[in-house]
Image (tube, rainbow, N blue to C red; front, side, top):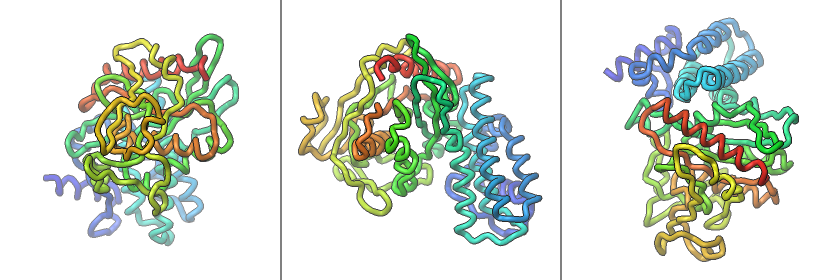
Length: 384
């Protein structure tokens, strides 16, 4: 049945373009299942897909294609953001699945001009970044402060195809908005990043954040992901991967508790200390009221055991197994951002928030998570 749905999907996407077998990534291969499980979610943003299909049919140049996909990605991002902010749907899944529908379409579409494989990959990347909010990372300058937040796509979709990610919902809810506290105002912009080890190894996080750290463009950078029962501010991220969890391409780098692995950066082992420390105003952020407890989490695991570290100095000489944020990509985005901040000599407050975990999708709980996440950022303003 899965293959039947997949075949129907391919014909739908490429419009009977004559390919005997459509090309797809592992992520894109789940679209057919999602269409059956989440038809209403996917249909929420289908007008954006329909508009792009009309535009593609009339394109005659590569330049026109690049412009069209960048604009289409931005439209998809803004439509998803508007849906969350105005309609209070608190749902990031439509954006995720429709992004994949478009990348599959672009991977297989028969254009009226020649595209090399590299050209096509560049087109897909242009669309993907735009649909993740990269084109909206511009601040008006009308606020006292600027905050950049990142979230993640839904993941573990082979276990629960209906899964949402509170961090992605928080980014959609907060991006483009201004929050205020005690006479201070802060403009928030954000992006969602993929749950893919390969993108991290290729340096996507460093490419995203380097301009901000180099120029001290913002006042706080907060990476967010889904975590445990409550909110955790992850004090000591670790350098190594040890989680058995797969990425969304079903990839695993071989790291485990007894043999944690150093991630890559542009083909080379990521250079840096075993642990780093965040610089978020934790005491202020822990005052954020809401449905969930907020804790300053200093617990780490080294090859010598697990313990709550009293200081970064206490971790000198230890080999990281799990940072405060674990041994998966949520810990890693925190480590990479703080490592980059320190390397570039920036004083931007930087750190990671783990949100409460949800199973599948629950709009009411997601709304409470988003509200308390916003409150944490508001509480931080006077301390920046």
